[in-house]
Image (cartoon, rainbow, N blue to C red):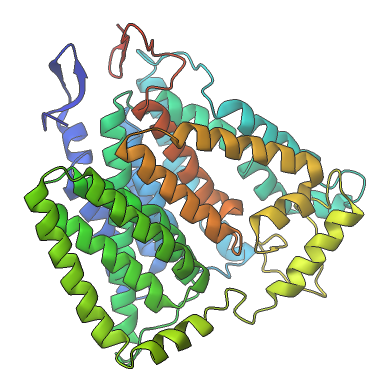
Length: 470
């Protein structure tokens, strides 16, 4: 933004916004969210962090039309309880009180900011998401039992990956700033803050476990997903900042943390997308002296890390590569074999999202049958119908991201890293937070690239977020 007191620019003039908007768009708000999660995490008081973030989410809905601060708080809500991955039905319903805060705030938000809200016009992502929603509902047609189809996990995943996510997309699209530069920076800053929180959580876990070695945590895979999305956007922010070296070093730190965490699929993907993102970063840093200085810092850091981590040289590197088994000895091969068998047996509609096979894998209360691979999950659960719908969505996302500007390239690398890891993980089928997060990323890309049905490309017609069309 060119003016710290403005969210939107009109005709070269800054549109003044409220004090609340300025605070919620500042780094202080994101730092507060990090603190609200990190401090309770020290005491294993995960619910406290969750409720603090829910309060900030609700407050943001009340104080501003801008949906980005609420979205940021939502992401931190999901990280706050990330240790509770084996949550039971009783624990889930214990969090149902969240509705008492969020629903009134949401209703107030919708009514309070109705003036000036544009009528929704479907963007590029609407029709593919509608097709995905239909494929999810049709999955298992002719094979799945009524008990499995209407089970609570099945209903949750079918709806929140489908029609509910479609509704969330419409809501977000209506109340997201039309200023693509602002939305892109806010998304990047939010992911940087989430990555910083994970680094703090790993540090806390390190000391809680006795400070002997890097701690193991089940949520390493989710942390890997977040950092795969965050690293390219961290570097995008750095290329546009006078303090770019700090962003560069933090991106390297994220990659190193993923490496240490033991998330092997995430390590493989971040090794690829991280290196490409760094190369792209130096391409878009135009100042030659700065580029040389930052490259020298990065090279010196690489030498130090290599000397410490790979003290035995080639032998250690060979050993590390030899251990990079993304299957990790946890039965993924059997899941893939079963998935392929289900695809061959039910090629058109699959076996459905609610399919269970307790002999192969006994599920937690709110889990679906994870094949731990997006392609296998799609075709086994929804057959060729689901495959066609998701392929359409994938192509449209690629078309939106394939532009010649740094943000689009960074978002594309984030997306490729996430999708690559999802080939051996569950990322795409986690509606909260990753379904919503990807939806936001591509809505932001539409704004940044001005690929919008309500913005005239030839005349430069814009939408004033606070006052409606002009």
